[in-house]
Length: 262
Image 1: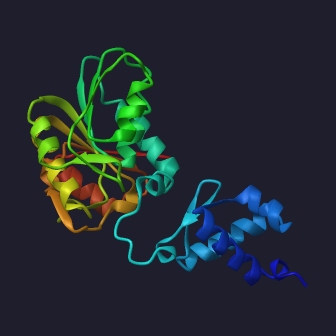
Image 2: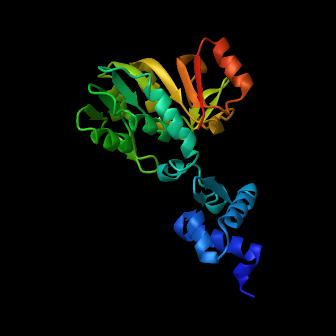
Image 3: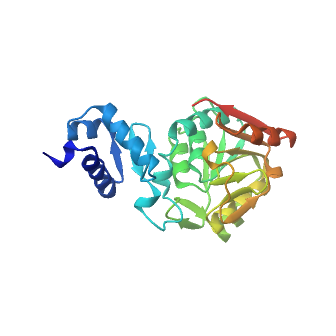
């Protein structure tokens, strides 16, 4: 009997493919192992329950146990996690923009989704410390796009540090779209990176309105570096899995809360 004929053998092989390629696709795995896509989805569900991978739309990517000790995932990994939720949040958050606005976009992958939803606008100034957001904004060929100068963080493809913060102080911005790694009502906004936190703090100080965009998996968590207290947020745009008690607390603080279905 071929090792792949057993469920355990097939799942071990899936993990080996993940180790080599960083991602797997349900359809491709189905063809490779000669089993149905339903069977492959069951395999991925079981491996997810064992915290050996992260499920994404159409497949899976490496889980934390695949790369032990890694403090912060690369931006290319983060973009795939909870993608449907991030896309829906980005569409909803973009509705807060008006023609003529100067918007500030941080390096979060959910904030990047906001930039992907600007087709309806003709006159915007977009300031960002995200290389990915800058490239996305340039595709429209009609906006003023400003990329902050400074040190580049490879894991997030973001610009941080004293030079970036000095650049930020040159601008007044209408709206900041801020994506974060962790959020709780009591602890506020936080991130694993001290450099990112410092740059985000200056961003908040330069914006008239702060719109926090993050999926519900970031809620009730706290990371190493403090960004700001919850009171600094004007609006939260997140998905419909936001815990009801958190929503009540935010509304009690007069913070606008928008939840969207993915």
